[in-house]
Image: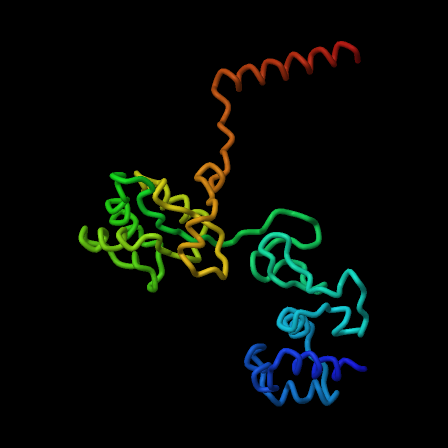
Length: 240
């Protein structure tokens, strides 16, 4: 079985037509037809995308090789998205798949959890402050400055996704604006769109989002460092 045959077989097992596969990959039906006819070979980017789509390993799709370790679709250890041997970084969460490094997070989601206990302030005033930050895209409920009644209506519908695609700096700025920050949650951007599910996850604290800055040396410490440096140099010269 050649590459063209494995593409056709995996596509049919996935229940997709050539046109549907082309739509998923962003190519024409004719391109898929040429791959399956052996008239052209797909680019490596499309191979990786097909492996994820079909749930097969790149060893099998490219070479026809399969073993016990690669029989099941490989998954990202961070977000459990299907990945392939061709992926250096997880296409879903950005985790470095080759070095065991921590996820490379490039954007964040802000969620309104709402009041956690009866009688607790629900963060409506914070919503007004956040809506004046200019950090949110047009599809966010905070894209425009809110009136108090609108803020109350939003808090009543919590949990609620307030914005996605936020940078680290924006996430820090927004948390800084919140008086009742416990009513809000900052998470890594993901494919999850259910606010209830997101609100149950642990979020990033401001201390994690904002790396500690090394405090500059005081004047006294600078003077001490210079004195010690000079003394050390004199000590070394005494042996020359």
